[in-house]
Image (cartoon, rainbow, N blue to C red; front, top):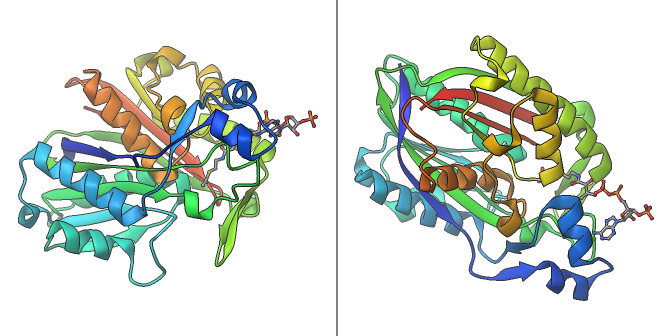
Length: 306
Ligand code: ACO
């Protein structure tokens, strides 16, 4: 048994911050950022709750599901509006939901962790029939806009999916990983802006994500040639290229939005999923792999039959 996606929505702030804007604020250039990251522009200016409400409402409308019919809300975020209560409570009230709700924090791997958690819960005998899974992050308030190591990458954005129980098996395998020994590589909060050793993150991410994707495919009895659509976390296009090279998945199979969105942590994978949906790539039977990594460090992969 499993859960299929019946609605999807996205949210991006209106304010566009281009590489040229950043070059006026710090010692960098449009050319450097594009070549080293694949990013041309990013969106900033909305809190996590607003991103969650907007994307959640759109996903519910597309699914044609009334808020009272949702049995569980899971919000993946590493940038909650406030410490207490969880931001899922704000979204719960704004959308008029009547179900259980909780926040999940696995940084940029969070949406994929959330996917595994919700699919697994929906597989249980008394599990929820319909779940709203949201990935949303507002990194801009936590970004040091004088630090060219992080400011060129980070942004705000989110996406939401409505999952409905089905008798078909949808999630074929998963792989969740973490290594807290790398917890200093990306850190921030409690008044401190996010700092990052980008070079080290790059190396750890390529290795960990490639191994994770290959482990998950292996558990499903599949290989890289079977992948129809790859939905990778959008941190740096060079990381995605390196992961494709190491795993043997053709880069053309990856669906990317980073050029216009930057890295909005939990928001990136649902944003790529929405793009794949718009482009008609998520056909019934397609093999869809999503994989993310982030602070912690954490990483996560799932292999899904659409
Ligand atoms: N503009 C211009 N020059 C720069 C910039 C910049 N923004 N940043 C660094 N440079 C310079 C450096 O000073 C260095 O110069 P030097 O050779 O004279 O010493 C040169 O460019 C190369 O610097 P590197 O740090 O080696 O550049 P790299 O190719 O590694 O790119 C980057 C840096 C983009 C940060 C990359 O390492 C990266 O993307 N890392 C991964 C980040 C990531 O995935 N984060 C995800 C976590 S997000 C989360 O969990 C919330």
